[in-house]
Length: 141
View: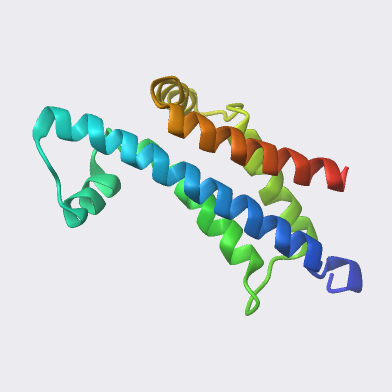
């Protein structure tokens, strides 16, 4: 199924990039917030320690869903091996589900809600990402 309509459109590539960047800012804010809480309990951590914690500590692992989706958005927008238009649209829809806190993983949604209630900066970044993803989805609808 390699017809012309399957090719990733430039506008969709731009949407993937915009949503990815907004979600990256959100992820950084959420990670910073989790770090503050962790450091209050256990003391300061280096960037290397934070990386290790982000990969394996239960306080941080919920953020992996966001980071994984960012990686998928970036890969889909790549010039070397772009996604098809349909694949890209599915990823953009998945971003919207995640940002609307409608994800099927209830623990993830709960942790996300708690973090947003706790951090004004994370809430602001979330609202920004949601606005970008919603605007992008409406422009395709």
